[in-house]
Image (cartoon, rainbow, N blue to C red):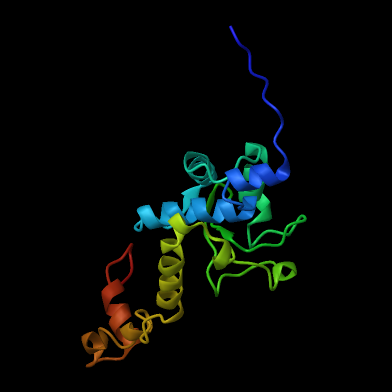
Length: 179
């Protein structure tokens, strides 16, 4: 019966095994994969993002480190402590989504990365670059007509023959003892 001793890995070995990704990059890829596979879902629980990172073996970092990146380090609208990246956006205490230009963020995170450096993205995840940049274009070019502003004047023909105040008063006639 032979026994094997597991030798501790060096930081360089860990980086090679996990595609050379930082924990922040691994978190972004994990979240991006969730968005890509579930386009109708706008946010994900912190646990779902952690599970995505683990399921895709994106990093061998301690899960507590990955959780801390999901909770705080990568979250644009949280105070940086100490990491400053803007890869995720907190939609609630328990949910996150990818960060997009135009999202509000802590001013101390100004100029920090919003996605992995594209040249360092593992080849099997290259498709996420085009997908993410396509989302940015869609979000940066919203419809030219605001749907709520388009409603201005809708229904005005209902009271065209009488002043609006009189129309409302007539509607209220008979409500709870009103004359």
